[in-house]
Amino acid sequence: MRFLPTEAAARLGEAREGFSRAALSAVYGPAAVHAADRGDYRSLLARCGDDRLGVWTRLFVIGVPVGRDAAAAAFAPLGIEEALGCGLLEPVGDEVAAGWGAQFEGDRILFSDQLPNTTGGRHREHVLGVGGASKLLLDLALHDGAATALDIGTGCGVQALALPAASVTATDLSERALAFAALNADVNGVDLELLQGDLLEPVAGRRFDLVVANPPFVVAAPGSGWTYRDGGREADGIAAELAAASTSLLNPGGTMQFLANWLHVAGRDWSERVAAWFPETEARVWAVEREVLDPLDYVRTWQRDSGESHDAEQAARWLDWFEANGVEGVGFGFIVIRRIDGPTEIVCEAVRHAVETPWRDRVGDWFAMRERDLEPETLWQAKLTVAAGVALQQVAAPSAEGWDVDRQWLQQANGMRYAEEVDPLIVGFLGGCNGQAEVRLQVRLLADGYGAEPAMLYAQLYPVIRRLIERGFLTLA
Image (cartoon, rainbow, N blue to C red; front, side, top):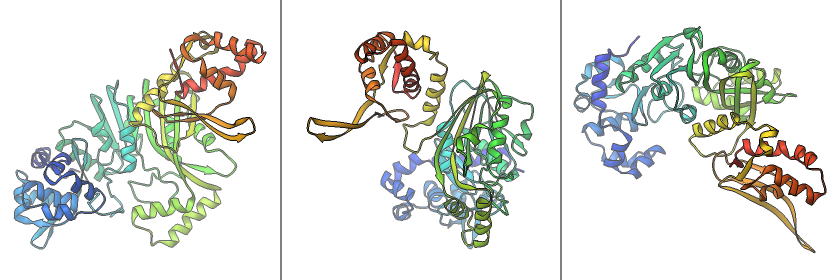
């Protein structure tokens, strides 16, 4: 299935030239564009004419019809009948309206079923455009060192078009999604290998340097059938399936990154469930939970997404399923896996606060640190420095002698922006982390002050020092 032949899609790309976010700001002003982002189109409505930019803006930003003759001029060299015939435009009396949505992503334009100024899925084969989840994955995806890349569940091609690898393969179960991905590749002048099939089936036996996926991860929707949203597996099975197959999809040193939902089940920590998904060897895993919703909020969120908020019976069935399975919440986040030699290493953590973006830099830092030698013998001779942007915060109460410190913690201004509570012993150790003295000298000085054996004190300090290095509070000089 193709919406337009490659040659016609190239002409659509030619017609689109000059329609960009930068052009909107330059012609109509940043304030008008910012207002439109918030759903206030008054300035754009007042200023958009029948010129090419005005027509494209009215159709694909504001979402209002335009005159047929103006559209014909604005879409040349693509013919108006071609635009109507493929579904890009729809007739509305003597005017035409957008049949598809068009969104900006960097310098690219992406067509999809995501019409402007609308919400909710319009049909069961609805193909999403650029949303919050896809933006997170765009921010996460690593941009170096990959010759071959795979995008699983590509949709309209959001991720695939942005991957920097020399060879990019994209898969989807939906024929309509692949048609949009093909169109967007042609319009933006990008070569993609497009394969149809369920999840991993189209690339069985193949390996890649980088794999990304924004799969249909919604958990246990009774009466499912929204292809873009429901993965056809029970519960969080689609994430478990991707995790289990991760190392078999990757070349040595390759990385897989995907978004997921996972269940919070009564009596079991979510991290235990997620950690159980992975192979026992060859995987280094970072699973980050960004938010968790209770079952009712989760059901209502996805019913609004598909335009089914009116379906109380569906909501009841969905909530009954959660209750019967002991589900107390549903987490959302991302999982990053790197194929390594040796036993699998897994870190699961909840990160609900804002971090310094792009996330790909945080991912790069995380893996780089875990490739360092941080064994006790190495750190014993290391010289450490408190990282830039780290501050010691304290809460103290007045007392007869002055101030009694109740608690104190380290706070990062940059990177992951972690906060880490520390005790007076660690504060004393950090005071000597200036990049000049080796850890063994600092420990001996502290041991003298506390009347302790240096070896015993280092055994107590080592796991804390290592954690502070891994989390970016300390750097190796």
